[in-house]
Picture 1: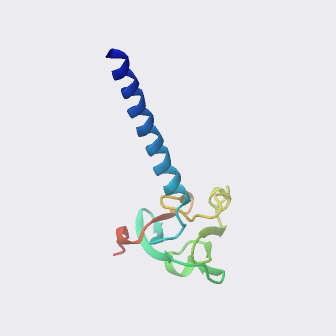
Picture 2: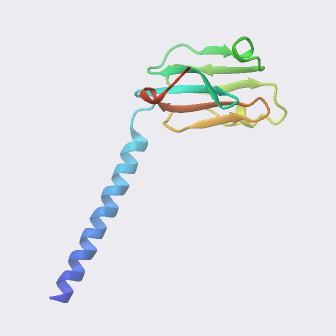
Picture 3: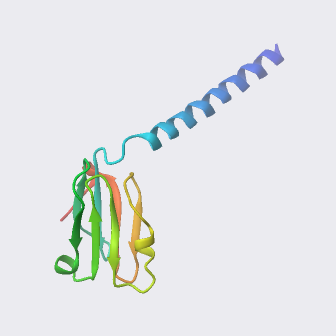
Length: 125
């Protein structure tokens, strides 16, 4: 009787672990850009959102006019990246392409960040 309970407990725990791993894998393999936006923030305040819905032509956004920082973003509709920045370390540029929920790149010297988040959570003032 005790042996059967132990086997049942091990089976249930194994199923929970397997289902959890499957959920993580499914989330990671879900299509990038589905219902997502790239939110550009300056000094901690959300300034603009770029919907990441479907691939399109490569587009550049120069933030100097909007935010007063020498940063150029580049996006293709389903992903975005820092293309250039006046910062000394270029960590933001080396972050590469962002395309999945909670991907983030930050340019600390220019106080600018790009975060990927669900479009329904974007709140631009």
